[in-house]
Each structure stands twice: as C-alpha cells, then as structure tokens.
Image (cartoon, rainbow, N blue to C red; front, side):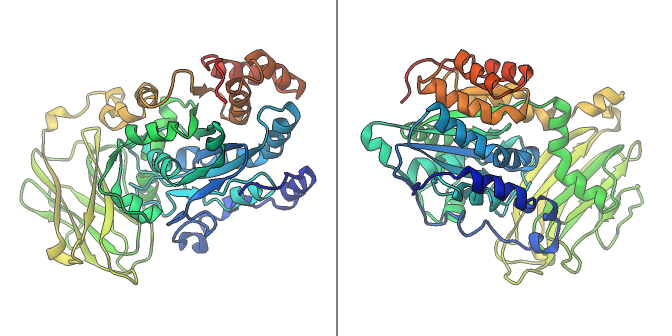
Length: 468
C-alpha cells in the first residue's frame, strides 16, 4: 500500500464540504452508541499492514477522553504536513499510517484502529473513519503497548530490506500498561500468543523497525485530575447521584445493557442494594441503572454524605441480576471507591459461567472505616494522591524514558504544535535540516513566535545523528 500522490485541491474541497468529519457532534446519538467496533477498513483482526514506499511513517493518536481533539487537529493540518514534506524534501517517498489508540483494559469498543499506509487523499478518509470513542479507564494508562505489539509483529516494511527504518510517533499524555495482554491480542488482533509479554520487550522489537518518538502534550494537574474522574463522575452526576462531599462512595461502572447491581454490607450487617436503597445508618443507593437494559454506559452509586458514615467494617459486593444483551457473556466492570477523600479503582469480570443474581455475587473489597481519619481541610480532601499519582507528568515520562531513546520525547506546552514537531523530528532526525532551519521554515509559513519557541524547546534534545 501507499501509492499515488496527495492532491491539495481535493483536500481543500473535502475540508470545505465535509464539516462533519469524525461526526464529533453525533457521538451521543443512539446510532453511535450502538456501534460495536471500529470501521471495517480500520479493523485489524487477523490483518497486517504493509508499506512498499521508501519511508513508512506511523502517527499513533490517543483518542481517549483526554486527547480526542488531536485527531481533528491532525486532519485540519494534514494538507500542510504533506505539502511541507514535499516542498522541503524532509523525507522522500513517505507513506503514512494513522492509528487510533484507546484503552482495551477499560473495554473500549475500538481500542486500536489502524489505517493502511497511504500517500494520497485516502489519508483523509482514514482520519474521517476514526471513531473518537473518548473512553479510557481512569488509571493514567492507555493501550499504547498494544499498538507497539501490532506494528512490531504484524507490519511489513519493504524499506527494511534497504536498511531504512520507519518513523513512529506516539501522540499522547498518559503511560502504557506494563504487559501486552494475551487476551487482548486475541480479542483485538485476532491472534494467539502463549502468554502476556512485558511491554519493554515489545517496545524493543518496535525499535527494530522504527525510530520511535513520543509527542507529549503537557497538561495541568487539575486538568489531569478531571480526566481521571470524568467518566464515572459524569455518569453519576448525569443520573442524579452524589459524588462530592462524601465520607464513603462506591461507584460501579460497566459498558453494556446487562443489569449489574452494587451492594454494600454496613458495619451493622445491613445490606444496601436495589431492594433496600436507604439504610438506617444513612447510606444511600442513589443511582440504580439498567433494570430494563436502557443504557450501554450505566453506573450505580452508593454513598454516605460527609460526617454521616459510622465506624466499622464495610464490604463492597457486585451481582449480575440479569442479562439484557442478545448474547449472554461475562461482563467487565470498574468500581471506584472513595473513603475519606482517597480513591481506589478495582476491575473485575462478573458471571464468568453466566451466573445471575446471588450465584453471581462477588466480594470486590472490604475496609475498616474510621471517622477520625476524615480530612481536616478542603486542601487535604482535594488531593486524592493515591488515585492520581499515575497521572503525574514525572511518573508518565519516567516510564516512557525506560523504552525510548534520549531526545525522543517531545514535551509540548501547546498541543496545536504537534504537527510542526513531527515535521521537525523528521527533518532533524533524518539530518536534512537543523533545528534552526526548521524554525526558519516555520517563520516563512507565518507561524507565531510563540509557536516557534514551543517547537524549538520540544526538539532541543533530539540527537543530530543520522537516523535514516
């Protein structure tokens, strides 16, 4: 794949007439909610990707909640990107594969979408067909390692026979999972492997085919905190439940029409559930969903408001009351537990043998509650350090530094500069231009001085050695 040339007139016409690319404003429609997977041209079940061009380039975009708009930005700037590659002669004979990365652990329906390597206007269609699912799991990680595994093992590059590696750009602001899951390889890629593979081994294999980079758009801690809480918080609040100002909160989230039920056993031995929504000790099941299978993004919520929870042992349990999907099968779930301002996440799968009601019950966790440990200030309450530590830039970047070469991580204060940084990396990495020359070409394109400075700072650490 990868033949043809990119027609600028066709590209401009498409962007003028197709204002609804990606259907960003349609993602909440019933038709979109009922989608079950990626577009057929981006589905890589049992497939490979092949590039016969001189230089393969992969741009792998995080399309979870925190980075969904990056794809639209790349689409808008693609004509400029192709034009600069040709005008400046950064890399001859290039073909691009756009890839969308979600979170397989969070049961995203399209955790990996991979376009063919193309050099013409079919690239537009690849981006338009991306499903910006905006999922993710609230752990500070996405399935980057699954994308790395696919391209390391199921991608053929003719350029390698000529001694030329490709270029691979991850664009995202989170970490990767420590292992490639054999179950996910089977489910998403349609391949059988003997067992889980450490991610560092997968990235090592990816380096054999590509020069690998990370474009890292930086975010404030407050923005990251909102990303973590966003999905469960949004569901609970939309259903009328309470999230803030609580002593204890247990929120159960899953992603199909089955009727999962959240149960809490109180220190007094009382069970809070759909049959007993308010307990004598002020616990309250204030959100109870999917009695009739009305949602594919349900949530249930049991909470004690601030200064109301009593001391003692609590048990958090989950049941699958009934199946509402056409095919009965086990259901993955995520449980978020907040106790005195500290948050933990638990993942599980219920009904592995298709059990229902009491036969399906699982004990997720138990804990001893001490009212004396309630936060004494709003500042202490707001930190939630245990829940958010994986979202700290230092933690994320340290993990990426363990699998990428020095200078191959580009930190961006301005996410809109990501295409300029990719262009610069191709120019400098291929030893066709210096950083100063890259900035000069940006100036000729009337890019702002601020944008030029962002790009210069991002590229500062890139090695000047020839990578071609």
